[in-house]
Image (cartoon, rainbow, N blue to C red; front, side, top):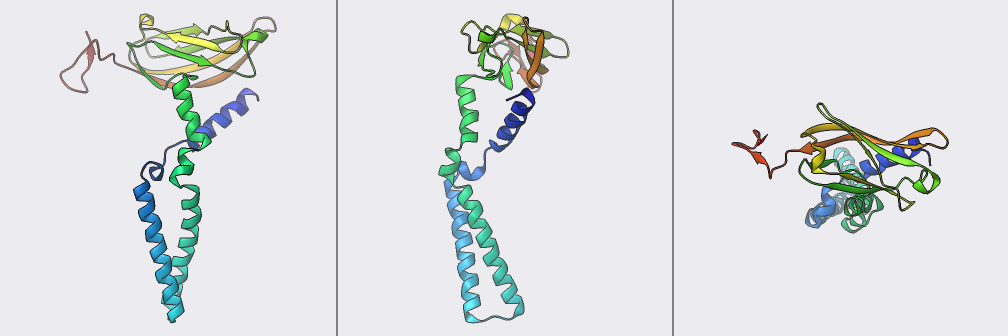
Length: 207
């Protein structure tokens, strides 16, 4: 898979992994399912008992909404969503730390093990993370000594001030002269609360 295709798939999966309320609140799911069920039953009862034009129209509309809602509710049932590949992908990436976190503190050590299947270190590729902020820049090579992935470490001693940073992930092959971008985006580095002095939540400053 080339870098453009990989970026497209990642974007689609990340969008699909946005949590849905029904997944976390089965009670709300069950309430709405029951509400739709009662509406359909009432509409069918109206149709069976005979109805004028407007009542017939509303009853058929209710049945139509009920059929559509049944399909949506089936796809969005809590257990299915909780076991979905998209959601678990996000969870496992966080658990295994295979990507650069979108948010982290200026006072913590960040480590992640980046896998780039098409460009493994065993084939002579090297990985570099480039961070560009308003007042600071960081270029950090990944350790590919295991031949399969790149271990990237950002430490507090890098002295990255809080703020937004654009990042670029690039792999290069010195033997062939090739270079490919394999990721980009924005990360936010927050204030190190262990060193911050503040009089209000919005006035944190570094001592």
